Image 1: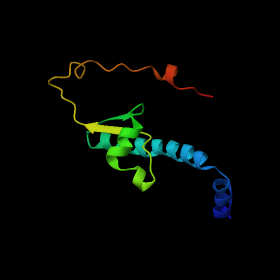
Image 2: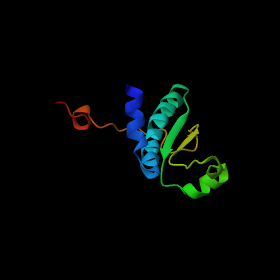
Image 3: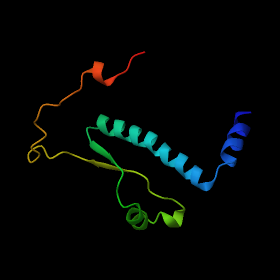
Image 4: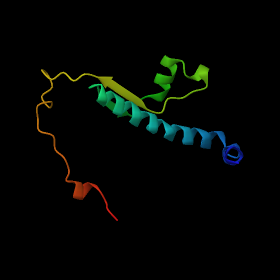
Length: 101
């Protein structure tokens, strides 16, 4: 059965392999959250490269057996003071961005 196969695959993994796999799954949630934010007209920016240890400590993640791997900044742009907000968006032509086979 499918369930047995999944248990077999993940049961053989090390804790480090479990973490690496789970960490990559956060990007699914980030993508969905960003899409929902866009629907609600809320600006969003995903982030890595932050101090995971500080975030984990502030949020008490270690006590829950969790670690931070990504962040999502949410907010509203300050169009009055953001000199970039009125600039024309630059888009790469689809022919240069998408590979068709």
